[in-house]
Every structure is written in structure tokens, then in C-alpha cells.
Length: 372
Image 1 (cartoon, helix red, strand yellow):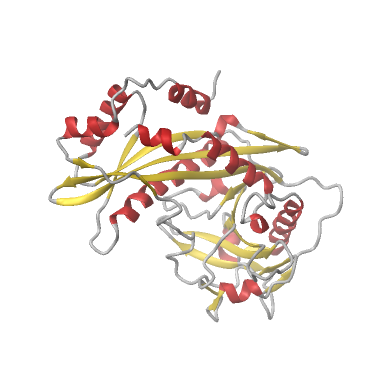
Image 2 (image 1 turned 90 degrees about the vertical axis):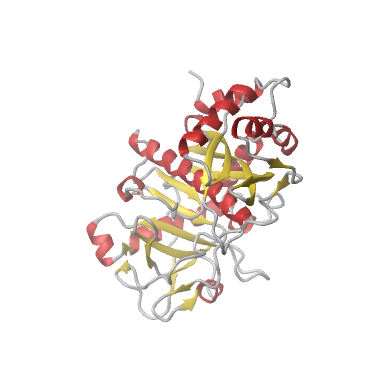
């Protein structure tokens, strides 16, 4: 049976050149003026986010036993012959475009379109392969919140009927103090995070994840929606970038100051974070994967893990478990995308492979723009 990913690609290949353009369908079916704007690609021009951008300062300490004195901890190496506890690696990615401007309710607002997807690769001994059961692609159209949900669903159906391709039409809320382009782009990012969560929940429900078969998610575990931490017990988040001015610890020291002082194979103590829509507790720490270069933060990653059990929530993550996870992350540094990705020093290769596969699966900018 073909995977959902394969079926999606097959549908895309079947799109005929005789089909209508999406903007023509929106104009006709909704009577909303759609004005040309040059179909600008957004991802590398406007919208840059950190997973910790809007957080309160993280508290400390949050591990047991607590780390005395400084926040630096040397990570004990793993004995030779022990298999990696990391079995699965997930990356979510998106490409976003400003495809038109629309006039709704007297407002002149952008129409943001995007391709989003999730890819999972799995490790079988030393071989990495794509786990196609958990790879998904989706087209999204972020529309200003001026239409009812039923109207958005109506547009979805008409686009599918007349254009021969499926788009999920989602609303974004216009706010007076924020750029609507950023709001529309953020809405598509939220949709991508929802897809990541659905993928993790599906893997957990099938019993694929375990203590010796962890899933590594590229980026933060703060998805902006309610989740059950029990289903994320065997999941860690690994961020290549983080906001260096984010404050952590009782002294509210900037993370950049803590991370830049780390030596190779050292980590910070675990900091406690609680917040977001679900108010769940996360343990987070910073680990230096490579020796310091001219950039003092190059090679430092942020690691996140949910506190699931009552003792973890009350007294913090167990130091031995944090050290084991950190040691296995250090082992991932030995194969790198050096020369292929500017973030290579903080990149682990299986995530790079998932990201590369996913981006290669997207439609080209030219082909995607031609749909409109």
C-alpha cells in the first residue's frame, strides 16, 4: 500500500496544465479582490524565529542531584560497543510565499501560501533510511480572518475542484501592532508544528518509541499547542540555534554567556521552563558538541526534554539520564554536513538527511508560483 507521502506526490504529479489558477478561483467564488504582489519568497527575507523568543526566564536548578557551584558539567563518555539510543530523527520544514494582496473589510492584507512537511528517518545499525510511513507534505493558504470557517472550507473545495490540487485554507488574525505578513507566515509555521505533533503522537501510539529507541526532533519541543507529555516521554528536542540573550538561572544570566564558557563535551546544568498554552514542564540544557572556534556559540546545541514523572516534575530530571542523552548527542558529531550546510557545527547528520529529503520533495518555487 502506498504511503500517504507517496500518494500526495502522485496527486501533485497529476496536476494538469489546463487547470485554473488559484487566485482566479478565489476571486470568482468569494468576490474578494486579489491583487498582484510579485509572489515574494519569504523564508529567508523576513521571518526568523527562535524557539525561546517569547519566554519568561528559565529557572534553575532542575536536575537531581543538583549541580553545585558553576553551571558547567563534564559529560562522561560512553563505553565502546554500546548502541545509540537515538533510533528516529524528525524534521519539519516549510517554504512560504506572499502570493497576492487581498482587500477584505476595507483592509489591504497579504495572502500567504506555503508548502509544509515532516520527514522522519530511522537508523538501523549504521544505515539511515527514510521512514516513509511518517513523511507528509501539505499545501497551506493563510487567509486573513475575515471569513467564517465554513467559507474557508468552501474555498478549499473549490480550489481542489477547479485547480486539481489540495490546499488547506487556514485563518490568521490581524493585529494592529504586528506586520500581517509575519502573522500569516507564523500561522503556516503553526500548521507545520501541528503536523510534527501529529507525527510524534502517531509514532507513540504504534509503540515505536522506547527508552532505547528515542526520537530526536529538530528544534524546540514548544509547539504552541496542548500535548500530553507522556506521549513525548521518549522524545528530545535538539535546537541548532537559540536566543543568546535569553536569561536562565536564578542569577538571570544570559544563555550566551553560559554557553560560550562551555568547553568541549561540557553541558550546562538543567534549567526548568514552564509555560506556553499547555503549561507543561520542560527541562532544557546547553551542550558543546565541538571545540570552540572564532564563533563562541558555534557547536553549542540546546537540548529539551519533558518532565513526565511526578519526581521529575517536583525535583528535576535525573542527572544520569541527562548525561546519557548528552553523551549520545556527542557521538553524533562524527559525521557532519561540513561544506554543505553553514550550521554544520551544530547539525547532526541524520537530521540533515531528513531535512535534505524533505526540501527535495517540495515543488520548486517556479512550479508552486505557477499555481497562482
